[in-house]
Image (cartoon, rainbow, N blue to C red; front, side):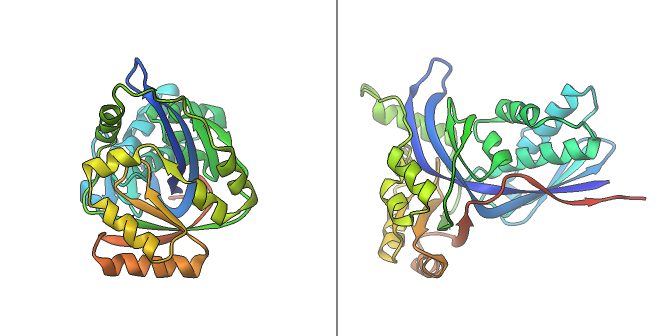
Length: 303
C-alpha cells in the first residue's frame, strides 16, 4: 500500500512571546491559521527508513533523521514496537525555512501516513502527543483550521472561523533560523519586563466573525522586531505589500516569509503581482484560509 497525505502551511495571526523559560523555550499565545499552500507526504513500504524530496527548494531539505518526517516515523514505530521501514517522499510547496511550518507540516503528514500504512490505529490524542514531542508547531499541522497554541505552542484550543481570509506570502531568498530569531528576541528584550503572553480578544472575535478589516488591525508578531533586526531588507517587502493595497502585513512566524492580508481573492492577486514586480522578494503566492489539517488524500493498494 502507498498512502499520501496533504498538509497545510500556517500563518501566525498573533504570536505573543513571553520571556525565556528555564528550559530555553518561551511561553506563547500563538494564534495559528492554516492556509492553502500544501506539502504532500507519501509513505511506501521499504527495507529501511528513507526520505526523498522534490519541488521548490527541495535541495535545502535534510534527508536524514533530522528531518521531522523521519523523526515522526521513528516515534510512531517505537510506540508500537515496529521497525521504521518506510520510504517517505515529500513533495514541497510550502516555503523552506520560511516561518510557515513546512518542516512541521511534513512531520505531521508523515505521522498520519505511517499510521495508516502500518495500521497502527493510533487515536487522535496519541498522534497529538507524538506531534508535541516532535516540535511546537507540529500539533497544529495535524489539526489545521484555526487554533490557539499555548505553552510553547503545542497545547491547542480550536478556534471558530466565520469566513474566508485571503493572504499573500512573499518568499525571501534564504531562510531564517528559528532559534536565532528567538535569540535575537531575547537580546532585544534583555532587561525589559516581558509581559505574559495573552491572546487578543479583538483578534479572536475578528476570526470568529470573518471580519478581514478587524483582523488586519489586530495582527501582531512579537518576533517581528527580531526578524527585522536579522534581516533588515524585510522592511522593504512589508512596505511594498501594504502600499500595493494589502490591509496589513507582518513577518510570518520567525520569518523570513512576510504575510499580507487582502480584502478578497482579486486584491490578493494584485498584491502578489506588485510584490513580484518590486524585486523585494523571490516570489509571492496568494492563498486562502482556513485550510484543513493533515488529510489522507490517496491510498493505493499494490498487488
